[in-house]
Length: 121
Length: 108
Image 1 (tube, rainbow over the protein chains, first blue to last red):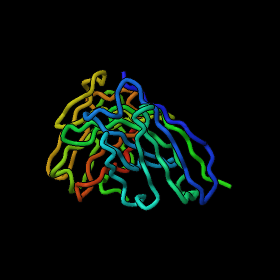
Image 2 (image 1 turned 180 degrees about the vertical axis):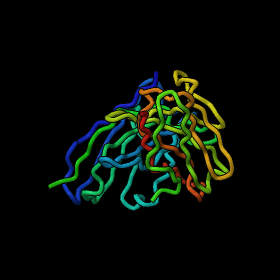
Image 3 (image 1 turned 90 degrees about the horizontal axis):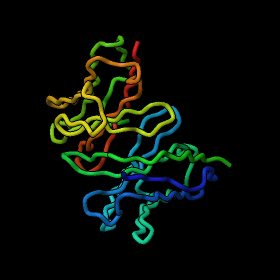
Image 4 (image 1 turned 45 degrees about the vertical axis):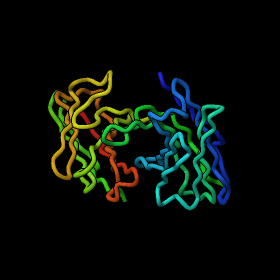
């Protein structure tokens, strides 16, 4: 059974960097059969795709976040990470990590439980 | 705003059939997949591809597609189906992922 778990600070100050890590079990982030994604959901709003990373390290980012975003892999720890810099209150959201497999579309088949990150001074 | 358009809210009487739709140009080229999200929980994949259900998803959930519109149908809606439903596919460029704005399903 694949499991994902987000971790990181729940409170970040405006203009600082939001950093989260997703620890994967039951699959390998080095696997070529899947890729690894971040999604967020502001309180009371819908899902927003943030970006994903392949086992090769190649990334694909939401154009609206690309200038502030870095997603990376740590294969030794079977983790992948998110860094979003220059945050504002608009970045307050529940952040999810998820596994994607491609079957005619990007399928988010396993999700972490989500972690709430609040941007506030 | 999302490149995939969903009705914000839909209601259905208990035991009846409801269709939730998702519109977007990319759906002419890519399948949609559908996610159910209940309050305080992570989304769960319920339909993908032409009409495929992951293991454990009841067969009252089905999917279809025509032109630029994908549909999720629940045949014989149950109280536990009350949730938010999101579609996802690629954006119009085909290069990035997009989620629909979500549909809140109420079971009356």
